[in-house]
Image 1 (cartoon, one colour):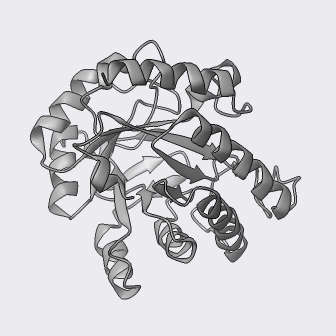
Image 2 (cartoon, rainbow, N blue to C red):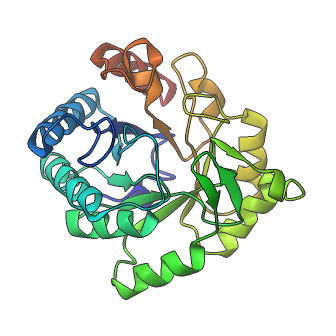
Length: 268
């Protein structure tokens, strides 16, 4: 089932983040690909058992990030995503490949049978901690068409976290959202300034009221503040589900279950 089938039918779709171990070639890499796959599947099982609505897989441990993503990343992420897809055949599953490797993410999603990707740098240029990131919408969607992969949705960050937006300081987040909608984004992702940082509820509402496509919250949702985002089409949650609420720690099954217990009550 795709998220497009859940939006509107299910209140605030919850997407669990799987941060895969450092991949081959990255400075912190210490694990074999089978070990990486095994841990990702273990996290997928925890999410599935807790009743989450979908999953997204990301190589966030591959610090420091680079725009020059090699074939080893594509191959490793395809192995991980394919295994998670087999384990969770009925859940919508997506992928993000850092940094801003959106074409790679599309190729991985197609090969693995996934439903969506999360794309950075979709519209407007900005300065990320990896360097200057330019808009990619035109190139990315033409690549999707060339792969005959239009069934894979592209959810796009706007005013991307971990970035300076001084270049586009005269362009509001609402104008950025409308530009992404005009450039055929399938859904917009609103975040705080960094991983785990709460998105501004007022900013989220302004974006949601300005576009006709789904709006997702991409950072900072917790057990205590989830009530502020119930009007979002979906929430991507990673840090809050980890031990101590820190993104790099191991997944905490009890935190996941507690959060989903509250979500089930809020949806009644």
